[in-house]
Amino acid sequence: TLDTATNANTNTAATTSSFVYDNTAPAAAVSIPATGTHYNSAGWNSTLTGTSVDTTGGSGTTATISIQKDGGASACWDGTDAAGHFTTACPNYVAVTGGTAAGSATANWTKTLSSGSLVDGSSYVLTVKTLDTATNANTNTAATTSTFVYDTTAPAAAVSIPATGTHYNSAGWNPTLTGTSSDSGGANASGTT
Image (cartoon, rainbow, N blue to C red):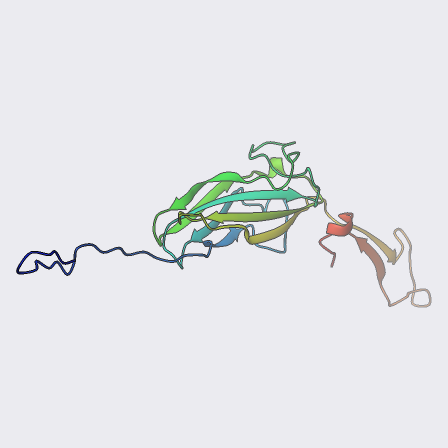
């Protein structure tokens, strides 16, 4: 700036403004549950975990999650860790513990979902929503997803040859052993071996 005084007083640093242009929502990852995994009650970890970070603008991050059961329109989790709570309209984003971080720090979030909340034979999709603190808040309603199946029913098996209770001699013995196995999980079956 310059005034009109005789010796023209000058201020070359009258004011400055710095800013970051940020039009990208924070990134996210899910650690538990691992996507594409089939879990039973013994293998299920009731603490869901993941991360969120604003790597482009560094304005901070907030993560929330939505979990949908069997692809139903009104089959999202309401955030209550108990049986019968997958009845809310989808998506339904719920708060997580540790889901907020400032600047470019990483938010390490957790949420409890015990095996008693899950239904045997059902498939689930966990979706992470991220939001930063830029002026017009960049949001990504599907920053990352993790799909998993909860399956607590063991496969069924039957032996065809040799027949139970039968006595064999060398003439009647069939050297090819046969049988069947199946997983009643339907479309979400884990498979059998």
